[in-house]
Image (cartoon, rainbow, N blue to C red; front, side, top):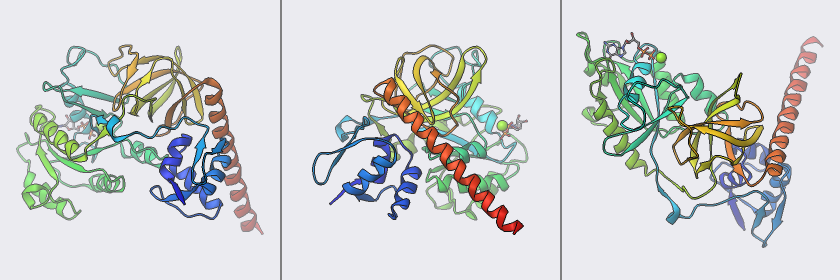
Amino acid sequence: PETITVQELANRMAARVPEVVKSLMKLGVMATATQTIDADTAELVVGEFGHKSKRVSEADIEIGLEGVQDRPEDLTPRPPVVTIMGHVDHGKTSLLDALRATNVAGGEAGGITQHIGAYQVTLESGAKMTFIDTPGHEAFTAMRARGASVTDIVVLVVAADDGVMPQTIEAIRHAKAANAPIIVAINKIDRPDANPTRVRTELLQYDIAVEEMGGETQDVEVSALKREGLDRLQEAILLQAELLDLKANTNRSAEGAVIEARLDRGRGPVATVLVQNGTLRQGDMVVAGTEQGRVRAMLDDQGKPVIAAGPSVPVEILGLSGVPSAGEAFVVVEDEGRAREIAEFRQRRQRDSSAAAGAAARGTLDQMLA
Ligand code: GDP
Ligand code: MG
């Protein structure tokens, strides 16, 4: 009997799906995230990952890692997480700054420039949305390569005076690969040479048909510089979010992704994480990639200390053993022993795979020299 999906198994082990898929391939089993595998196979994979499992029935195993499957009745709406992408100089940074200034919660507008890799905006209506503030397609690709899927919606910025350019096309590809719906922000409409119709027409070539062109992609004319059209852009984001029916369970231990991390001279390793499910609390024991530690302090996007962060909330955390990589998953575990065990297991795996990669490289070199 088929028991568990690959995705669920990965979740329960706090592992990434590609790792689980790889491990399955070693066993000769080809499966994708949504496919189910039987308990025997799952047991082997769990062992391979260094976890203990207990057979609770012929068809089911219990994994020695806290694994909670959310029941539908425990899920509540969560704010959308948005990434802004587009060609260089089309206004990504300007738009992020303009949107940040629309926040009605917390510090005085524009007053605090504490910069973490993401921020949340609360609108007058009370609606919230989170922006990942690491524009740059490389960051996006790097995160996706590590298995993180942090973006619900991509806002594609296209300058109305310049039209579709190479990085616009690249951004469209990234968004499509990530299965993230696109909202087109036609920027710089304040410019005398702005030609938004041209932008809409050019986008058709890349399979993006905005509403005016008979398609379903939302587009909004904005000026990041003059701060015009931002409310309509935010309405479009909220509408898209509603269609996506984004939900999470606030009443469980947290899991999410590392947005960026660095070593701070005074504070040690500092990581900006995005909570994707559950609630992260000060004092929680977390594993992030190959690092672990107790959350010693937590700061919000305005640099203010907070003791808890729910779904779609970005926070800076202090207390990790080292600096994790952007895009790595983090998960709260029950105690320090467990955290160390998982972190050490992952470090071992990483060493093994880089040793294997090194050996393979040497192999080809030997062949070339032979
Ligand atoms: P990025 O490279 O995509 O992050 O683009 P920036 O935000 O750095 O903007 C590039 C240039 O375009 C800067 O000189 C901005 O001042 C200018 N810019 C951005 N948005 C607008 C806009 O709405 N109207 C006009 N006229 N200029 C803009
Ligand atoms: Mg920029």
